Amino acid sequence: MTPRALPLHRAVEQTPPAVAAQLRRLAFWGTVILPAVHLPLLSGVAGDRSPLVAGLLALNAVCLLAGHDYSPQ
Image (cartoon, rainbow, N blue to C red; front, side, top):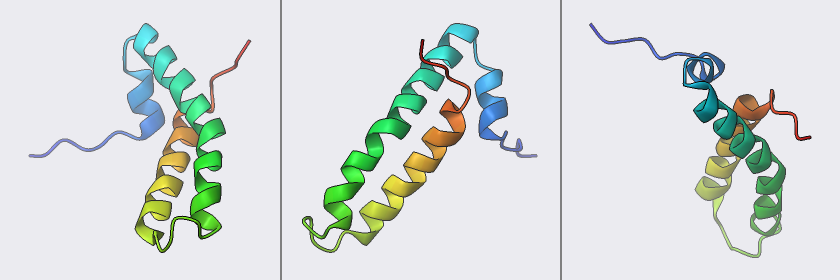
């Protein structure tokens, strides 16, 4: 029997609090910074990099979900 995958927010909640806080912080700032990486790829500077753009968009979505509870002070 294979274990079922936990939703991302539930997996973060089940990690130790210090680790979860750091993951949320990194995910939040990843969400902020990753669009700057998308710009050169979408403008065509890097050539035809469709799989890379799709991967970065997926990573940005994961960061958005994992870091939405973080509140920078």
